[in-house]
Length: 95
Length: 95
DNA sequence: CCCTAGTATTCCTTGACAGGCATATGAGCG
DNA sequence: CGCTCATATGCCTGTCAAGGAATACTAGGG
Image (cartoon, rainbow over all chains, first blue to last red; front, side, top):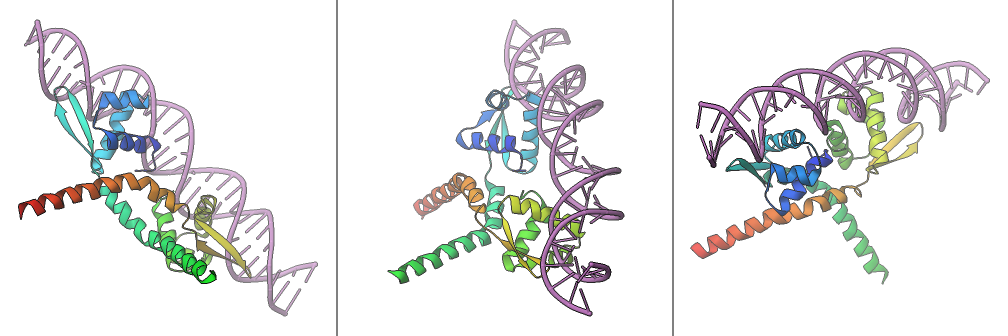
């Protein structure tokens, strides 16, 4: 999902502002079908949702599923913060 | 990288304890070459390191590169915490 | 030194996308 | 209703990576 650089670019862009498909096509310099296909993947992953405005589809970021990533990351984050804490204690002792 | 479920399983396992390749093979129920190849990928990504003990290679988790993931996630995390904060303020106002 | 255990590497096959092109769908407008 | 713009879908091809089998490497043990 997030393995695809194009998809991350789309998310990064939607994080800043909602966009129509055309906007994304311009921004990414890719064919429209390719963009639409990535959007479909993101939609099915629940990472984006879209509303219809006239003949355009305005896409919007949905951060929900990213919390799962955050949760997965959590135990690892704990590891490196623990290490930092240990280092800190170590340095404190040295003073 | 983390797109591969097998790789995540390896990381999750190494998070709990260092392991030899054989241990991982048993734990994952996969062929030894497959495991070694995943370990190579993880090694080149800096996510694991290994030390030689007798004729075994003991692999160890290296959390460094995961901070990059955490950094990438950060602006998104900000988004949902902001939303939560906004909701909280909203509820506070309702009381 | 040969032999064995543990691990890495190579070769091969197979399956999964990504991306382009052509085309279908669908909403507004004359 | 036919037309056009914006988007979605199907089809096709090329690329890449995962996994297995066979093989090469390397460190200890007789």
